[in-house]
Image 1 (tube, rainbow, N blue to C red):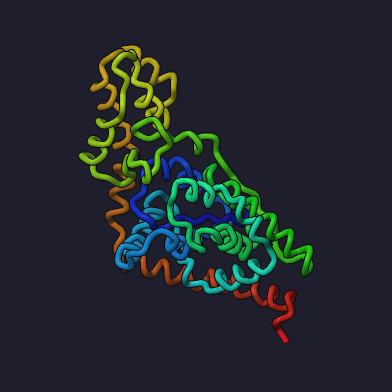
Image 2: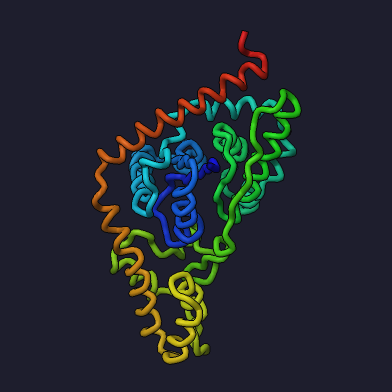
Length: 311
């Protein structure tokens, strides 16, 4: 059975781009894999500095995972901060790689160009992510297109360690669906919280309707392309072509049809999410953390021997 690893930052409310981009495929893949699902709380510290918000987000992201179909009885769901071996291994990797290697990271360069704060944690983000993945002998990492490079970094770091100290880490592969790179927002750009163009994954019907009604449309077009691009996530193009041809220029009807299709998918997941208590979440995290740390500890015994700190 393949070992699958995935992580999600507890950095705020999820949107349908997160669902179609990573969560949907992850939930499906976890049904037939030895899976670990990590709440990347230490990664979130690179941008989120509000402790109360972080605590709330950690609980929410676990609730989100379970609501979309991740079964905590099959997959190990855990907090990154509950397994200190992640940061220990990061330090070891940091002693092997160069500054110039990390300076090539797209995510770091993008934030630098945009004038955002580039703290050391952000610079070192790919190394911590490599540690997350490599600790568990991961075979497959489902990620969005923008995270592909980080899995490539993990492979290169694994190879560098193996060459220096002997065969220790598997070199993981990324799993990316074509649709991941093209989940559009309400303005036609990639759906992103930073762009303010999202449709909330677990929003109320009113919140979803407000977001959909705000989708930017071209008054000169017979078919609202931004509406259609999002709608393709919920229905086949053959069905949509008939609907859109019958309602050319009637954007209100088409947006209402999209609202109904989103609600049909999200409604049952939202009900499941609302039924999960904080106590349930804390139990899932506690049990998952114990299992993850047991695996990570075994791996680090080997790593410590290889590098020479075990005497």
